[in-house]
Image (cartoon, rainbow, N blue to C red; front, side, top):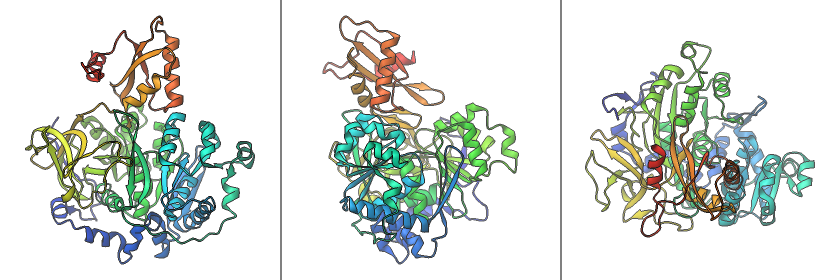
Length: 567
């Protein structure tokens, strides 16, 4: 890593806005002061996520402010104000009450980025229920596992995704967003028909700050995905990231490209900007470099959040040529943000030269939200290629295998010191699937190195998590799905380097006796994983082997398979 090249984290910020010194803010951080900064005299607004993200803006005279700008796949644009979201979410909240949904119950959507998705999220929060995202690329097994664990009460989906639920409709109320003909064909309630009959007002249910408002799932290397219940106590941490790392301003046109079926999109494309009362932009179209550039130009996007994979795909497309950065009528970017995997120096330079702004690398997890960032709104020197500095309200350390704090310059596991981190909110997995703490430390499972300037540098995972195109995939999920194929005896999944996606998934497969590998079987395995697990988690390469490398106790040695793939 090149530690000699540094950038000032606020280098491209509006010069009319004086940046705050990072060390001053970090060292003098006080939670009570932060709560007052966010909620003013209405501290009870933090006891309901709808009030925090919509209701208080309406009450305080900002009902006409735009909350959402949505563009569908045909280019049609819909705008919703906070007042319109208030009325629509009240109707859906009353509909949920009619279904018997109570505070603490789980409500899910499997929808693309649409106004209806945002409305359902706010409606769920309004009655104290818990919103559960279902990513549109999930297959049946992934959906069923999440619905079974969460005991999901209601699911909102559309015609394109309804067929994935098969018999799951028996265990939850299904609401279809689409035509009455389609909903009747499935025997589902129709979203628009049911919504318009409901009152446009309802009181928000106030809860304790420990009460969950989001139900996430995160991938692991052993067993199924682990549940992460996000409490209302996370709202101040979300604000810290949006305000001081993203540097979101009232004047920004902010677009977070992440899908809200995942943590980064749900936390920081929906909850975060609405918490600050700032417009969020939804682009329903799937990623395409030309569409991405045109969307940024059309909507004069000033603040962008995305992933290194997306930036690499923009770079490799050739769509963003050097002249575009100098065209006053083209891109309007003030700053950019990147999360999900390491951002390399080459991409940082490309963003500066072709998108015309500084990009900051930022690190977090589903469990914790963002905890280590290059901060646009806080002044600090940060070497290009680093993860940045600890998010205010968080104390980070690097531990060795004996759980002792390491000095600067030595690699070890990144940990959060819980008692010294007032903004840290994670307290354990929903169903105690794994012990994530050692004494006063939350263990991230990520290997890093801290430098003397306070910056952190990512080295890798201490397990076998695969990050492909910004998505975290547990190899066990892939392996178990491959094993469903009748010809497969054993399987192992690893990530192999890819110039655009960061990594792609490769499956090593041992077939049952008497069966020989073929292109046909390999394709069947790929199709099986796409259908049962997810379209982002299928192996793009399948290699048939006679045996898998294992430890004496029988554990697959995936690191050896990764070495084979690198040869």
